[in-house]
Length: 273
Image 1 (spheres, rainbow, N blue to C red):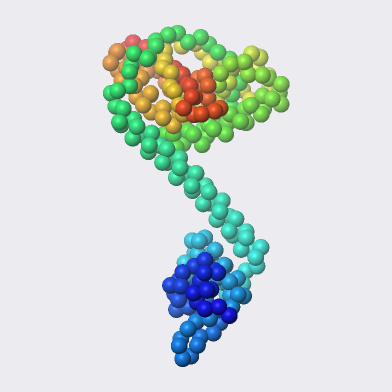
Image 2 (image 1 turned 90 degrees about the vertical axis):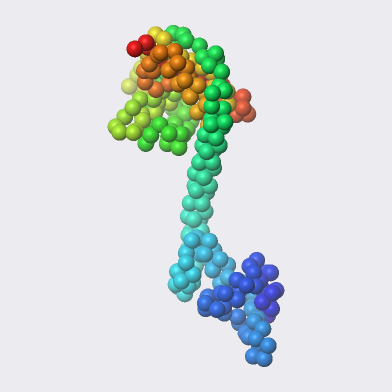
């Protein structure tokens, strides 16, 4: 048998925690010396300790842990529970990481307010372009809603283009349309040179020409695009224009290599009121 200190070391827990589990009846010592009160444990009790810690990490209360332990779940059942929780935790980590990136992007936008050079904005006509595209609906235009919707669309689109034998012949172009309420219809497209066909499992559409567009080149990940968008907004207002619809995002160099080297052109159609 092992002293409480040795058992704590082997089980990777604290002595204090073992005493607590003893006090609440979750893991009793195999033997207690009647004269000294010293607790002793056996190696076999590590199995119960492992389950106890795993269930606690699943988010169960100690009382719920007691119920599950008393049911003596098999290793396979516990593995299934832990696998599910692992997937949930990974998803939470991804969501928290994305939220952190958005907070950092907003902080950078605040720090750079008024410092974005508007002389980088070019007003030009944008010709019509034919794209193959897939579409989906996002809950809003916020990055927390747009990102998870548009990001899977491009791999799906390129996979379908490959099966159809349709090669891209230009840049990726994302466009957006308002939908019901705050919802936004997201179109992930890429330039192609084919006619529409009902045999395709994607759309082939012509994006109309923009007679006059305020354009600006954004460098870096789209996580940091807020500053660039806000610079265009300030320029549009200062020059007496009106924006027509959402911007087109033309991915000149995106998704490969260092994100600092990614390049996206934003195209916002403008008119004089």
